[in-house]
Image (spheres, rainbow, N blue to C red):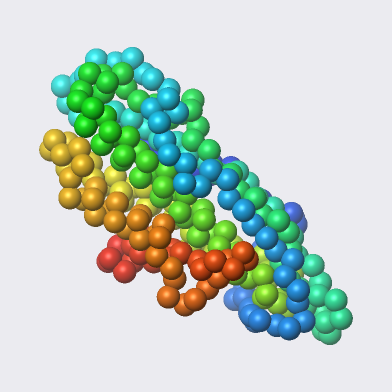
Amino acid sequence: MADILNDSAVKNSPSVVSNKAIPNSPVSVSKGSSTSTPLLNGSLGGFGYTLNWSDFSKKEEKEPDKPVAAAYTYTTYSSYKYSYVPIKGSKPVQFQLSGNLFIKLTLNKEKSFVKSWIFQKTQQFQDDLLHHEQGHYNITSLVVRDFLEDVILLRYATFATAQDSISAVNQIEQQSLKKIQSINDLYDNEIHPEQISGQSRGPKQKEWDSYLNIAFNQNRTDGAKSSDGTPCKMRLVDVLSLNGKLI
Ligand SMILES: [Zn+2]
């Protein structure tokens, strides 16, 4: 999972405590069972971090006469662990998710770079480029947040088998973490043409800024709440899909 296809990449595949095989069968999840007490918590490090050029390795280079990558943002997130436990007194035995999921976002300084020639350009150009790179970091941050929120929403769920609990997490992963690369690719595919045409913060960049802003600030309409009682924010994939971008 460490393939780098563009200027943002994620690595460290998440791991599950169990080594059991994951079945392909559909998962039956029953929410809100009164028999289970939540045993699942989560937290996210590095969320909302503001990038500086000092976070990037500086590559000495003269300004080229054709468009090339001027900067590259490589964001990683740490692996996480969770487990499942049988619910006391359940007959037949049922399972629930358990654990303290902690995920840390990191900008990898060795692999993230900025070309030295950009510092000969205007302050506005430098700021706009950093703003674009911040967008990459924010995309990864938001999707990791969404993954964590959705897994934590399973804190009251009961599962008929232990494998079902793992499958439920894997399904969320497919809808979130596995899409990070594609979302970053789409961000670049839409914005790079206007950057090449000389607009360092053009209409496409502003459009994406608004998607990210919604995912940061707007509550979900279903009233879902995090374990601390605060409303879950809209998933970035949902904001994109509402705007016709199917990832
Ligand atoms: Zn980019």
